Length: 530
Image (cartoon, rainbow, N blue to C red; front, side, top):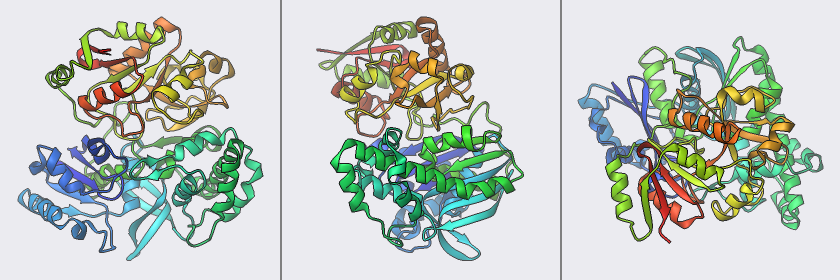
């Protein structure tokens, strides 16, 4: 039986489960090449998913505001969905926003029970027959069910909105559609600043919604514009105050929880510095899990999961290692070759194996890789990645300047063989979706300077053979060649959404200084035709 979930707000997306297992998660931004768009997610499904007429149940998180409700905003698509469910003997469900986040967190994990936390910029749920906008919620996850423990509303705390407004109003960076959210740039600045200088002003504000408690953005904008170090100091204060406030709310919830597990979702948990501290500092005796798509595109997965498990009472799924994030469309060899043959003025290609790619990386070349279905979420995990040698101390600057065209201080992630984490990091934490920033040992950081941030931390991706066989085996070969079980991994894009299809891949390859493009499934190596 197929169940489809949707999100039609920003980060428009749909997901399809087949007997509870996600088989596709499509984000509109990957198709239209504009970041974080709103859109008609139901029509998006009917336009791009060939088996749409087979879907039995539809689920879209509820919106009680009539101007935003899916039934009113996209009435023709909503009608089409109702007709499909009626024909197939199903229903159209509308669970709450944070309940969908919570379902995505719990049901994507392997934990039967957990304290489930969601933190974002606001979303509606029906709580005690009232329509409320929550921003920080806690639930007791018990197999198929959820018990509400805490529901903080936007007038009480709004970390997501505060970060978005700081990102745009203080640092002059994008904070959403159409260029994407650059809160990660602010997070990268924070480790180079003195948090104590402005900490009190951020902490004392308590992250109230800025419209409900004014905040002096102008003062901090002047400080950030006056000097780069001033910007770093402001970012550091914002980051530390965020961590303090979150921990103050979490501590009693964790203390009163009878579960050893904590599951996290919502856009704020993309703050991997904070989630790293949960794992290594705050609650090291707990199991910490962040789902692959914690921001609003993941609502599509969570809505479908909530219907399948909680509404329809289907038993939990035990994932082998981890719930897969590789939910994009797989492209055939014929379509890839056709794309390359249509671009003979720009590229030429030949057959090559993984050993050849390892040699290229060892020689200092930058290689983009394209494999099977694309990964869902903000972070490339080996199927749509740009790879480079982490041992080269100049590689971070080279890629920031010539490939990604972004700020010099932005770090790059290490992909590491899972069983090697304990030998390289001070905390042995699984991080299959790049969800945690951990600390390298001092000796390890010196060996891979291109992926060690200025404080010797890194947002790592741990790789197992069951999660991604090609990438794991590649890392094994790379380790044999280089002596390190780590590769520099950044998303295959250049200030645009991650590439989705072969044409996107060739376009990005041509407009950057990437040296080679490798289609892993078919051993096709592409070079520019200069």
